Amino acid sequence: VDFRHSFIDMSNTTVNRENGTTVTTCLPALGYSFAAGTTDGAGDFNFQQGTNSSNPFWNMVSAFLSKPSSQQIECHFPKPILLNVGEVKFPYDWEPALVPISIFKVGHLFILSVPGEFTTMAGRRLRRAVRDTLIANGIAEPIITIAGLANSYTHYIATYEEYQGQRYEAASTIFGPHTLEAYIQEFKRLTHDIISGQPSTSGIAPRDLSKKQISLQPPVIVDTVGPFRNFGSVAIDAKKSYAKGDSVFVSFRSANPRNNQKIEDTFLTVDARDESGEWKTIYVDGDWCTKFYWKGGIGHFGESFAEITWDIPKETTEGLYRICHYGTRKTLIEEGASAYFKAPDWLLSNTMGSIAIHITWEAYKLGFRFSEKFQSFTGSMVGARYKDFSGCSRSFLVK
Image (cartoon, rainbow, N blue to C red; front, side, top):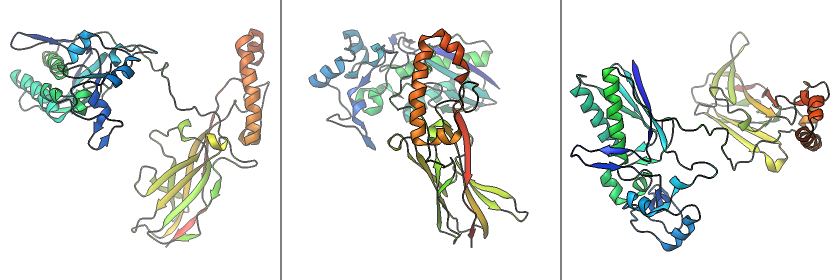
């Protein structure tokens, strides 16, 4: 078991060809056919695949972002540049230039991790180049596989010939017509390194921009339920009995699922009662027979519902069942952790109460920003604002 990893500057990589000539990659840019989409997902306006010429109107529109230089136009030829994303730096780089590549070796299996989507022929050429390098160095019958979209994303990688046609994938090959050749060269270098046991050279790692990302999706401000209601309580309960093949529907008072995406977990369970009287989970939200819908949010003052459906399989054993829901709610302030402020759960969960607390909270934050004494006096108010909840339907008979 072994691996090699490198960062490479795909915006300016020199490729040394076997015939002695050299070519270079380009700063990232997307062509006109990128906006045309694909056959199974067409774009808007008058963009078409296979476009090798530009349009004065769209050139004027795209120039508001960045107007490509003559060198950039020549480098990407025959791609007509629609979005010169490689030279857009505000608020940060629109496309990556420093990209990661790696090879993982497990016996005779070699996994090539690439930061983009290779076309079928581009993938074949990359695998063949790595395979030939391994065989030439004494590795008999190696197995080569490509793990795409690994560690970063640089759109598509088309062959030089495909690039000339400028369909969607070619227009989305952002580093120019020699992108595939650059990847092949660099993966052959990593292959030599892993065979010889020597470390691989690497360029500098890109900046970590994870805390600077801009999102146009509104944040979750607060989750609420009606007065004297509880999160996880049932709004619409299951019926008393069902036949095999029926659908069970239950609605729970819930919270925004973005608070906790339940990675390696579940928003729901279908539980069966065994002979000892214990509940045993038989289905979760990853099973085909269950469905989870979330409804509500901003237009409902933070009040929302989780609608869960279980399509009872024909082979289900007769007995008692229940459906349970699991979530995480967001409140405006920490509950019960402050010596200076404590809001009861029923007030935090109530729509009007939460709005009143929100106004108070915004005033607090304003004072917190401008007064050091205010910070020292009320600093303990700051804390976690998330709280897990759960609830179950009544038990019902499947017969």
